[in-house]
Amino acid sequence: MTFQRTGISMITKNIRQMINYCFSYADNVQYKASSPYPVDARVTLKNQLKDDMLVFLGYIFDENSADLSAQVRFLNDNLQIVITEYNFRRFVNDRCRGLDLSSYVPRSLQYFVMDDTSPMNRRTGYGTSISKYLVNTFNDMGCNFIAYGGISDWEANKLSDYINMMNNYIGGFDVYKNTPGGGKLGGMAGSQGYSDGPVRGEEENESPANVRIQMPPKQETLDQLLAELDSLIGLDTVKKNLTNLINLVKIKGMREKLGLKTPSMSLHLVFSGNPGTGKTTVARLLAKIYHQLGVVSKGQMVEVDRAGLVEGYVGQTAQKTAQVCDEAMGGVLFIDEAYTLTNAEGEDFGQEAVDTLLKRMEDNRQDLIVIVAGYTDEMKTFVESNPGLKSRFNKFIEFPDYSGDELIKIFDLMCVSQDYVMDKDAENCVHEHLNKIAVDHGEHFANAREVRNYFERCVERQATRVVTETNIDANSLTTFKLPDVQEDI
Image 1: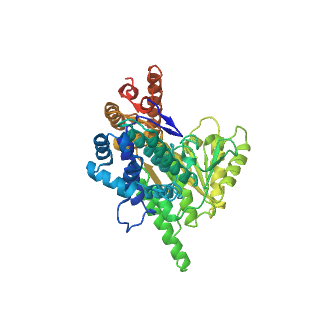
Image 2: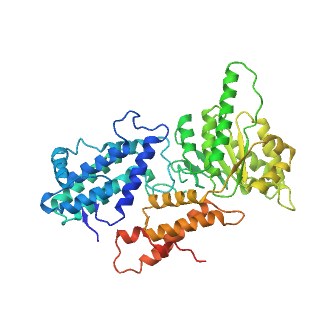
Image 3: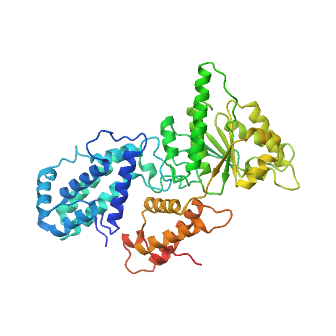
C-alpha cells in the first residue's frame, strides 16, 4: 500500500525496529566522547526523543478519524511508554494544539544534526545520516499512526507540514552528503572499522596510477580523533597499542619543550592481519592524529600497493617510488601488501622500490611516516628480508579477526544505513551464519569484506524474490526474509 500527499509516503516497515535504532543513536550521541548533549541535562537524549515523538503524534492526531484505543496501543508498544487514553488526550490538548512549527524543531533532531555535522560525522560509511534517518522514522511512524481509523485530509496535511519542517531544518546543514548516492560507499565510516574505500567527504585523487590520496576535509581536534578511533567496532588490542604509542609521542613532545633528552623512537609501523580488519581506516585516522601531535606537517594519507611503486624497467621504479614519497610528504604513506615488493621471483624491481623508500625515510624522517600492511607471516618475512627494513619497522600492530558478535554489528549497520530490516527468521539465520564463519573460516578470512559481500548477495537474492511478487510495497522492498539470507552450502 502506498499513500502519497505533499511529499509524504505511507509505508509498512518494521516501525518498532526503526524507532529502536533511533533510540540507540540517541544513546550513542549522548554518551560518546565530545558529545554535544549537555552533561547536566534534565533528561537523557533518548527520553527527550520519546517526548518529541509523542508531541509529533499528538500534533497529527485527529479525534474525528481516530481509533484511539489502537493508537494508544501503538504508542505504548513502540515508544516503550505507558500512557492511558485519557492522559494522551490531555497531553494532546496541553502540548500539541496550537503548536507553531515555524519556531518548533524537535530538540532531539537538533542534537542529531549537531552530531552529523561534527568533524566525526563519517559514521558507517554505508549511507544515510542519522538526522535523515530520524526524519524518515518520524514520517513512517506518523503514517502508521494515522492509518488507524482511516487517514483524513487534516491528518495528512498535518503530517506533511511536520515532516517538511524537519526536512527544511536539516536542509540548512551539510548532512545530506551522507544520504544514499551522496557519497562513495565504503568506511563503516566513520566509519566503524570495516571500510576499504576513502572516507566519505574526503577528496580522492589518482596521481600516479594505483595511488590514492585522502586529504582531510577539515581539522578535527586530537580528542575528536581519539574518540573516533575508540568508536571503531572491535580492535581492542589495536586501540590499546595505538593509545600507548600516542602517549609516548605526547610525552616526547613535552620533554622536548622542557629541554630534556628524549629517546629516539621510530613511528613507522607494520599493520598485520587478514583483510577487512580496518587497517586502512586506522591508518587514515593515525595520519590525522600524527598531524595533531606535530609529528607530520599536513596529515594526509597516500595509499599505494606494489603496482603504484614498481615499473618494469631499470630506473623507472626509483622515479615512481620517489614521486609517491613526494605526494606523501607531510603525512603518511600506507603501503598495502608490502611483502609483494620482496617476494617476486626473477626480477629485482621491487627491491629497487624498497631501496628508494628506505633512503627517503632517512632523508625525510622529520616529516614522513610509512605504514606497511599485509598478512602477518608475510609481513614478518618482509621486514626480516632487509636490515634497513628491520631497523625502521620495529613495531608490529596485529589486527585480529572480528568475532561473531562484531560481524553481526557490521551487518546490522549495513542494514540500517541501506534501509533494510530482517524478519525474525532471517535475523536468526544471519546471526547463525556470521557466528559460524567467525569460527570456521580459511586462513586468509576477509572479515568485514566478507560481511559486505554477504550483504550484497542478500540484497541480490531479495531483489530476485521480490520482483516476481504481484503486489510490491515498501515492506517488500525493505525486508530480508529467510530465503534472502540463506547461503548455498
